[in-house]
Length: 605
View 1 (cartoon, rainbow, N blue to C red):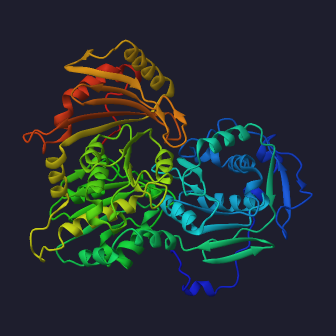
View 2: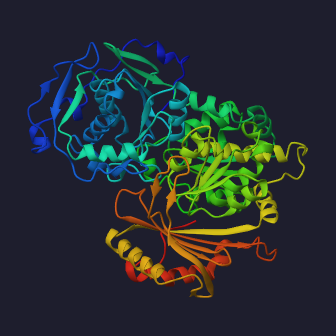
View 3: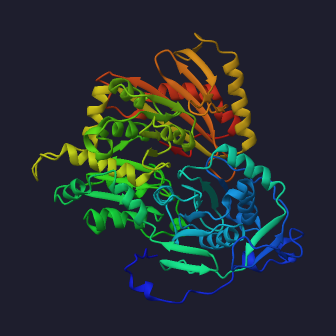
């Protein structure tokens, strides 16, 4: 896959591939099983110069849209009209405001993405959109989509991704809609979409040819047009408004500094090549697995210590690079490593916030405020307190940060699930986090001569801990647990909370309070309930249980454990060693093995 620029010789081609989209243009009664019947033409085409066919359909159950959009197994999405029903339901929910608008379109390159893009283009034209701006080869990282929407003032955009989940015909696919600020669609829209999916009866499909998505350029069908764009360009321009690329280029040119970035065969490969190698001058060997694969090379594109094990082996090996980093399937998550040293996502956002004003031009005037999701450790809270910043604790979900950013109350935010971001866009941003760490290291080593002792990743962390204390943190993930078993465990924990007033001893820990986290948005007053079960102890330790909705099947139980220390004898020790006593308490408290049969987690962070 090659990302083409406007100067690319291939743009001289004056002919586009002409094929029909079988999923939309050639439906049959047998393939739909009773789900479609005779089609008819619209009386008044919504866009001049195209013909629109009204194709009858019937609802599918379970098209509930969450914070991360709609995620299911690929085989579910490839059922006749399944994708079309959801997209049409979105357009029905938005109503007449879509007429004459322009939307973005792209995804992480996973299996079925290109076919889905062609379907969406036809549905957009059939429902009155004026234009679709689509990434070359239907590639568009999630943060890049947000940047594209914001820079070009688009109405919104579709992102075809199941994030960090595996791709392929036997694995996962997903779709979500981001609104005009580049942010994930708010609940007022997602709730309407779900309502429409239960009654959708007609798909408005433009009778146009497939568009050649491999070449940058404009294809017109009457008054409707599709612009295929370089997937990196707008995102790169946004990043250049945030960081000092000259400083970073000089730093990466040092012979005594090495970077390794693992794109995990996912969407950030072309972005990393363009940004780190072509713009900042890093050697080509600085990026690995940078060619996007529809199946992520049969891997799991989740940047953590388990699934990014090749990068971990490099960073814990002999003569490791100075900085290791990885991103996920759609480019919104990140992992940061030093030689034999792991930076937890909770620590990463806190350390970025603590160093931002001194290291990143975009933040030179100071931070407006900071925010974290509730399960994320309290490390960021301590930075906010020391620097006198506004601080917000939100439910998990980037949309909650977006409200704060739009109101000018938050500059930097993060989630323990490897998500870090800022108000330059309205999504978490993997490459942004890597550039933040490069900026911190470049600033701290500006006066260190070549061959001198460089201030490294571990030095940044240890200095931070000695300044703010250390919030020792770990997360246990139990993936694809039976939803019924997970629900029984959570019901048991709610019962424990109801019977545990302040002062209750749980193991050796004295309870300050226990609750099911609720949040009232300070901007719009909306309320979010049942956001995670918290056991908070008098010494500041926390145990949190939460069911994750980012998978396509079953349930993922997430257990979060945190303790705070300023003890010099403990501050540099291994997190699992320090947390072992409270982890034992958490497992006994939840009776997790009894309810699920799981003796150990799938992933430990």
